[in-house]
Length: 239
View (cartoon, rainbow, N blue to C red):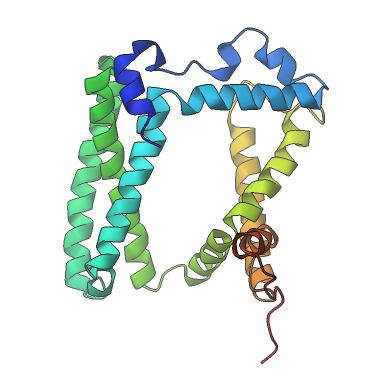
């Protein structure tokens, strides 16, 4: 996962990833009706994206750091101590200050600084601080008893991550590409934002409905059976 970082250091040409649509011919292929050509385009561009230093910092390093932070918090019993409102308040205020610093530094980086090794290191720190703030904000809402139904649905969607991811791909390929309706490459973002909210909201409701009746999501159940080499019960017992 961290391979793009040393690669980007020793091979500066891998530092950044050009936008997929800035590459000549890509938009023509995507808006065409050859599904195999679109699949080949996605594989090629995803490989270029994964191998870039920019992606290594933005995704791999940030996500790995947040995962390690969560594991550390669980191991040290931090989540149990968060039942104390004084501890939650202190951590939330500290994360709020960090988020202001991180957001301000992110804006400065984007406007004034060149995204080189130093720039990306600073960018990682800023994203990490923002991530901690969002984590603490959600924790405050959870312990405050706010949005209980939403968190329950979010938990169910998290247990069906693979299924929901596959459904999103199966849904958006015919909606966005030339194989289907060709809604992709619009000059404004708001239709995509609305569509994403609608689809994810529907998935939250469906995930909660499904897991009330079954032990696993369909894709998660299949993956589990293949991993352990045996068949698991899918439907919940009535007891």
